[in-house]
Image (tube, rainbow, N blue to C red; front, top):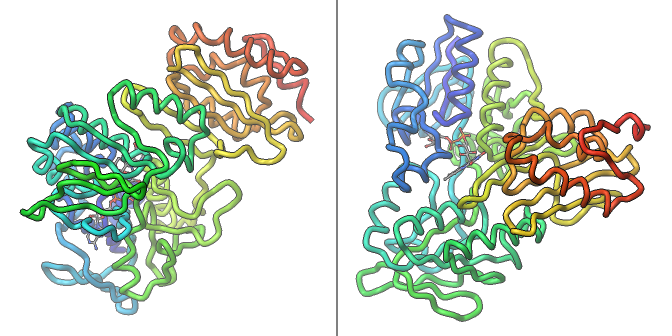
Length: 443
Ligand SMILES: Cc1cc2nc3c(=O)[nH]c(=O)nc-3n(C[C@H](O)[C@H](O)[C@H](O)COP(=O)(O)OP(=O)(O)OC[C@H]3O[C@@H](n4cnc5c(N)ncnc54)[C@H](O)[C@@H]3O)c2cc1C
């Protein structure tokens, strides 16, 4: 067996490590063009903030790869011959493979704005992006961040740490309008205001304007306003990196199309992580998952299949977490912006505006909890995963919230308030803290 993996991100590396465990003798080659060694993309901002050095982003020492007989090739894969099973590289001889994994990740998505190629305009995805940002924000006084999502806030925090005045252009009526209900968004907005990030909602980028040297000097918005700035961060999302797959004749849509075993349309070729698009996602799943932990899960799952034990990819309950400046955010299950028919929602907020807990549940399904958002409260993954898988009734969840609390000494201060608020909103389901009540509500 010779497995060739294209991409040394979390997906490619997770597959390599999982296969090495199962097959100590398999030949495994990892081709990647961004960095010679795997690094934690999610921690890029901490290098800019000065909390970590670049070498701290590498979870393994450089000797680890040779020690585990993982061959690293620092090159770009330029073409695939899926008939002959060859990968052509920008440098060096082609590689022949028995199995091939495409783990090529994402690329930043821009919308052909006039001026998007000017000096001082960029996205943040890769190591070169980080280096460019560090160079081009040096001495900058004002910056504009386009996009109100997770990377947008990261950029705002990074710029703020260097004393740069930041204006965010946000298309929706509130922050991360496609994901967060308005109450959650209001907490994030408070964080942004507390850090003097200027936010313009219902505002889009129209044009980026150059100075005489071809560097950005201002942006014009769809509202007609002009905002002076010397740097622009485009945080308008990412899209699967499918160029190599498409040019090589694999079936693609927005991503590289895969079945539940993560097999592409070509025999022996698999795709996983950010670049993959599931042909038939099961209920509650999305076709394209662009997260760190889903990349790891997909990489590990496909290693089983490649190793001879066909294993369908099943993600389990959705979760995600992030930090908006000082505000921690976790979400489990499904909490759409608009409440689905048949669901009810309970939303508790501390009067200080720094803590929020939302629980969605389905009355017709034994009050089964369907999703949770927590801001300023850290919850335990394993407890929420178990509640969602079991479709635990919201009454059990509310009564037993302390079990999910990651920092009980802190959380105890809010638990009684949350129960009291729940009982006021749903008197017919009143719960007593610390007492499990699920048995009385199961169908
Ligand atoms: C700034 C930032 C912060 C993030 N924070 C979070 C977070 O907090 N939580 C979270 O869940 N997710 C986060 N994400 C998303 C997460 O990082 C990605 O979902 C994850 O890294 C995807 O992993 P991957 O291995 O599929 O792809 P990638 O990490 O993109 O790795 C793919 C690699 O393949 C290489 N490659 C592509 N094509 C070729 C080719 N033809 N030849 C050679 N090499 C090639 C690329 O250069 C790249 O190095 C963040 C992303 C960014 C950019």
